[in-house]
Length: 182
Ligand code: IMP
Ligand code: MG
Image (tube, rainbow, N blue to C red; front, side, top):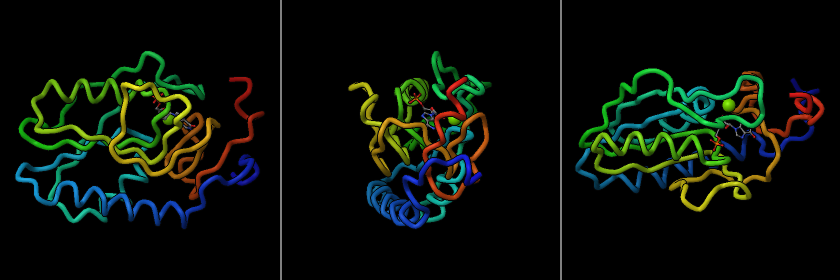
Protein backbone atom coordinates (compact mmCIF):
# COMPACT_ATOMS: atom_id res chain seq x y z
CA UNK A 1 0.00 0.00 0.00
CA UNK A 2 2.83 2.42 0.86
CA UNK A 3 3.87 2.62 -2.78
CA UNK A 4 0.42 3.89 -3.77
CA UNK A 5 0.47 6.80 -1.32
CA UNK A 6 2.04 9.98 -2.63
CA UNK A 7 2.45 11.51 0.80
CA UNK A 8 1.04 11.19 4.29
CA UNK A 9 -1.25 14.09 5.09
CA UNK A 10 -2.23 13.22 8.67
CA UNK A 11 -0.18 10.66 10.58
CA UNK A 12 -1.89 8.23 12.95
CA UNK A 13 -0.68 9.97 16.14
CA UNK A 14 -2.29 13.23 15.04
CA UNK A 15 -5.51 11.44 14.16
CA UNK A 16 -5.59 9.81 17.58
CA UNK A 17 -5.05 13.12 19.39
CA UNK A 18 -7.78 14.83 17.40
CA UNK A 19 -10.27 11.98 17.87
CA UNK A 20 -9.75 12.26 21.64
CA UNK A 21 -10.45 16.02 21.45
CA UNK A 22 -13.58 15.43 19.38
CA UNK A 23 -14.83 12.86 21.88
CA UNK A 24 -14.34 15.45 24.58
CA UNK A 25 -16.28 18.11 22.66
CA UNK A 26 -19.09 15.70 21.83
CA UNK A 27 -19.23 14.36 25.38
CA UNK A 28 -19.64 17.90 26.75
CA UNK A 29 -22.36 18.70 24.20
CA UNK A 30 -24.56 15.83 25.32
CA UNK A 31 -23.59 15.57 28.99
CA UNK A 32 -26.59 17.46 30.41
CA UNK A 33 -29.07 16.08 27.97
CA UNK A 34 -32.22 14.35 29.11
CA UNK A 35 -32.91 12.67 25.78
CA UNK A 36 -30.94 9.60 24.78
CA UNK A 37 -28.41 9.52 21.94
CA UNK A 38 -28.33 7.50 18.73
CA UNK A 39 -25.13 7.62 16.70
CA UNK A 40 -25.86 7.04 13.02
CA UNK A 41 -22.72 6.09 11.14
CA UNK A 42 -22.43 6.03 7.37
CA UNK A 43 -20.85 2.87 5.98
CA UNK A 44 -18.21 1.98 5.09
CA UNK A 45 -15.94 5.00 5.37
CA UNK A 46 -16.76 5.86 8.96
CA UNK A 47 -16.09 2.47 10.57
CA UNK A 48 -12.57 3.06 11.86
CA UNK A 49 -13.32 6.59 13.00
CA UNK A 50 -16.55 5.38 14.64
CA UNK A 51 -14.81 2.58 16.51
CA UNK A 52 -12.15 4.91 17.91
CA UNK A 53 -14.56 7.75 18.68
CA UNK A 54 -17.38 5.82 20.35
CA UNK A 55 -15.07 4.04 22.77
CA UNK A 56 -14.06 7.44 24.11
CA UNK A 57 -17.62 8.70 24.54
CA UNK A 58 -18.75 8.05 28.10
CA UNK A 59 -22.42 8.37 27.10
CA UNK A 60 -25.21 5.83 26.96
CA UNK A 61 -25.96 5.40 23.25
CA UNK A 62 -27.36 3.29 20.49
CA UNK A 63 -25.61 2.80 17.16
CA UNK A 64 -27.30 2.69 13.76
CA UNK A 65 -25.42 1.90 10.56
CA UNK A 66 -26.60 3.10 7.18
CA UNK A 67 -25.28 2.73 3.66
CA UNK A 68 -25.36 5.53 1.12
CA UNK A 69 -24.85 4.50 -2.48
CA UNK A 70 -21.84 5.77 -4.38
CA UNK A 71 -20.29 5.05 -7.73
CA UNK A 72 -17.94 2.11 -7.36
CA UNK A 73 -14.45 2.90 -8.53
CA UNK A 74 -15.05 6.58 -8.94
CA UNK A 75 -13.19 9.14 -6.86
CA UNK A 76 -16.08 11.56 -7.02
CA UNK A 77 -18.73 9.64 -5.12
CA UNK A 78 -22.30 10.31 -4.13
CA UNK A 79 -23.51 12.07 -7.24
CA UNK A 80 -27.22 11.60 -6.82
CA UNK A 81 -26.67 9.86 -3.48
CA UNK A 82 -29.34 7.54 -2.12
CA UNK A 83 -29.77 5.57 1.10
CA UNK A 84 -29.67 1.82 0.48
CA UNK A 85 -32.27 -0.35 2.14
CA UNK A 86 -34.65 0.54 4.92
CA UNK A 87 -33.49 3.01 7.54
CA UNK A 88 -33.72 0.92 10.72
CA UNK A 89 -32.46 3.34 13.32
CA UNK A 90 -34.08 4.41 16.57
CA UNK A 91 -34.41 8.16 16.17
CA UNK A 92 -37.79 9.40 17.43
CA UNK A 93 -37.45 11.44 20.62
CA UNK A 94 -33.68 10.98 20.68
CA UNK A 95 -30.63 13.07 19.90
CA UNK A 96 -28.98 11.94 16.68
CA UNK A 97 -25.31 12.30 15.84
CA UNK A 98 -24.45 11.44 12.23
CA UNK A 99 -20.85 10.27 11.78
CA UNK A 100 -19.13 10.21 8.40
CA UNK A 101 -15.56 10.02 7.17
CA UNK A 102 -15.45 13.13 5.00
CA UNK A 103 -17.59 16.08 4.03
CA UNK A 104 -16.88 16.82 0.40
CA UNK A 105 -19.75 18.06 -1.81
CA UNK A 106 -22.18 17.69 1.09
CA UNK A 107 -24.66 15.53 -0.82
CA UNK A 108 -24.34 12.59 1.56
CA UNK A 109 -24.89 14.60 4.75
CA UNK A 110 -27.67 16.67 3.20
CA UNK A 111 -29.54 13.53 2.22
CA UNK A 112 -29.02 11.66 5.49
CA UNK A 113 -29.86 14.56 7.80
CA UNK A 114 -33.01 15.40 5.81
CA UNK A 115 -34.17 11.80 6.03
CA UNK A 116 -33.48 11.59 9.79
CA UNK A 117 -35.20 14.92 10.56
CA UNK A 118 -38.45 13.49 9.21
CA UNK A 119 -38.43 10.93 12.01
CA UNK A 120 -38.96 13.40 14.85
CA UNK A 121 -35.62 13.34 16.61
CA UNK A 122 -34.90 15.83 19.41
CA UNK A 123 -31.85 17.06 17.49
CA UNK A 124 -29.63 16.11 14.57
CA UNK A 125 -25.94 16.96 14.67
CA UNK A 126 -23.13 15.87 12.37
CA UNK A 127 -19.54 14.83 12.94
CA UNK A 128 -16.98 14.28 10.20
CA UNK A 129 -13.34 13.34 10.50
CA UNK A 130 -12.37 15.39 7.44
CA UNK A 131 -13.84 18.33 5.57
CA UNK A 132 -12.82 19.79 2.21
CA UNK A 133 -13.85 23.41 2.80
CA UNK A 134 -13.22 24.32 -0.82
CA UNK A 135 -16.21 22.28 -1.92
CA UNK A 136 -18.75 22.34 0.91
CA UNK A 137 -21.90 24.30 -0.03
CA UNK A 138 -23.12 26.88 2.52
CA UNK A 139 -26.28 24.97 3.42
CA UNK A 140 -24.41 21.90 4.67
CA UNK A 141 -22.77 22.25 8.08
CA UNK A 142 -20.84 19.83 10.22
CA UNK A 143 -21.08 20.43 13.98
CA UNK A 144 -17.88 18.54 14.79
CA UNK A 145 -14.93 18.46 12.37
CA UNK A 146 -11.65 16.61 12.84
CA UNK A 147 -9.52 18.29 10.17
CA UNK A 148 -9.98 20.60 7.23
CA UNK A 149 -8.02 19.22 4.29
CA UNK A 150 -7.01 20.38 0.84
CA UNK A 151 -9.04 19.27 -2.16
CA UNK A 152 -7.00 16.15 -2.97
CA UNK A 153 -8.16 12.55 -2.99
CA UNK A 154 -7.26 11.01 0.34
CA UNK A 155 -7.35 7.43 1.60
CA UNK A 156 -6.69 5.55 4.83
CA UNK A 157 -8.23 5.38 8.32
CA UNK A 158 -11.47 4.18 6.73
CA UNK A 159 -11.37 6.25 3.55
CA UNK A 160 -11.18 4.27 0.36
CA UNK A 161 -10.46 4.30 -3.29
CA UNK A 162 -12.57 1.56 -4.93
CA UNK A 163 -12.95 0.01 -1.46
CA UNK A 164 -9.20 -0.33 -0.98
CA UNK A 165 -6.83 1.36 1.51
CA UNK A 166 -9.42 1.60 4.32
CA UNK A 167 -7.00 -0.29 6.58
CA UNK A 168 -4.10 2.09 5.91
CA UNK A 169 -3.47 3.55 9.39
CA UNK A 170 -2.57 7.10 8.35
CA UNK A 171 -4.46 9.46 6.06
CA UNK A 172 -2.56 9.92 2.82
CA UNK A 173 -2.92 11.39 -0.63
CA UNK A 174 -3.30 8.70 -3.27
CA UNK A 175 -0.94 8.90 -6.24
CA UNK A 176 -3.10 10.61 -8.89
CA UNK A 177 -2.03 8.24 -11.68
CA UNK A 178 -3.85 5.45 -9.80
CA UNK A 179 -7.24 7.01 -10.31
CA UNK A 180 -6.68 9.32 -13.27
CA UNK A 181 -8.37 6.83 -15.60
CA UNK A 182 -11.45 6.33 -13.41
P1 IMP B 1 -20.06 14.11 -0.34
O1 IMP B 1 -21.41 13.46 -0.42
O2 IMP B 1 -19.60 14.65 -1.68
O3 IMP B 1 -19.90 15.11 0.76
O4 IMP B 1 -19.01 12.97 -0.13
C1 IMP B 1 -18.99 12.18 0.95
C2 IMP B 1 -18.49 10.82 0.57
O5 IMP B 1 -17.65 10.83 -0.59
C3 IMP B 1 -17.64 10.29 1.69
O6 IMP B 1 -18.41 9.55 2.61
C4 IMP B 1 -16.61 9.44 0.98
O7 IMP B 1 -17.06 8.11 0.89
C5 IMP B 1 -16.51 10.03 -0.41
N1 IMP B 1 -15.29 10.88 -0.57
C6 IMP B 1 -15.25 12.19 -0.83
N2 IMP B 1 -13.99 12.64 -0.92
C7 IMP B 1 -13.20 11.57 -0.69
C8 IMP B 1 -11.75 11.39 -0.65
O8 IMP B 1 -10.92 12.31 -0.81
N3 IMP B 1 -11.33 10.13 -0.39
C9 IMP B 1 -12.18 9.08 -0.17
N4 IMP B 1 -13.51 9.21 -0.21
C10 IMP B 1 -14.02 10.44 -0.48
MG1 MG C 1 -16.15 6.14 -0.10
